Image 1: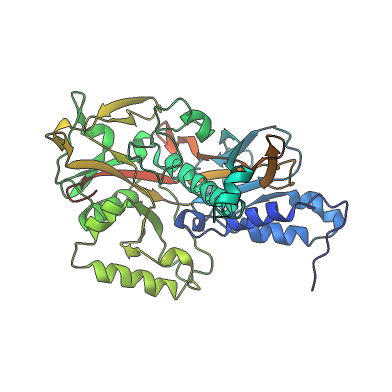
Image 2: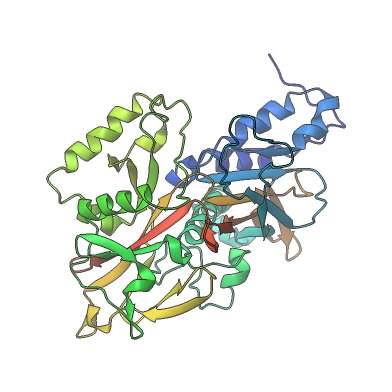
Length: 440
């Protein structure tokens, strides 16, 4: 049955812009799979009657997954600002027997987290008339997929850096984000990058883990080259989360029949961390667990590729590492106030000018770890849009893809029962050493 969109429908749009939106929402990446299906909600909205359209302009995905997407295609009352709220944990005792209950209700409190959206665009210049005559390549034809690839990379990488609470210092041509010291960095990231809160930041320590702030002694980070990511490290983090006050909530992957009886969290690890982990003799069992779980979850793509399950963590290889080299600063919070300071990676990790070891950051994700908000472009009535522009008297052509979005960790000042602590709601990070010898 055909879908008919009337001429006065607010979802009327340029077909290419809609294709870009669909492409981004369906991109093949683990980070994309960490969110609910905003695209299906949008498609359902466009099929509603005219009277229902205004109500469906504001869409939000489930908080059961790490990334919560919110899309507002109406005129935003708050301009470029989005607000996420959290109801604080409640502690109460029952009122027993015939005791008077009236007027003794437990009060509810909430804290809010604000972040912004902004426009990001990738223009690609396709060359002049003579360039296109001389070249066997159709530059305009390849410009569009290149712009889409850049936009997809920006979408994934900006989410990854916000979740990690740091950009790190790894910088290859694969990155579309500048380093944190670059003057353009804050503008590109839209919202400030916040170091992990003190109660969510851990570091490998022998066969276990410790809070990062407790491993800083006399201004130096106490970490050894042997403090790598192992199954013992993962087991230690499971123990930490099981005993943590207000831990990140478990995730619920759509159609996962075992979600309630055998809940999971996602652990993103760098390629180097993943390859270290793969050295364990139990590695094949680790991968088999993921494939078996996939069969109970309608073969959800999060369970495919280089992934495995160990101790209720779905461990996935992230596309790029959040890496700190010898002498680099690591920002961390000293206590529950959220105040940040820095400590340097041990200089001994660099030998004769060569980086032999570094620190990579693993990211553990529960539900609602990150907010991703989209606004509406006046070019398409969608969060993604495209354009073409001829200049130099029509001699040259630029094509452009853009988006209006913003991402930020969901961070709240949470009442822990014995005081308030700034808390990254759905994300925990673990810093471990990686051996760079043999890595280009």
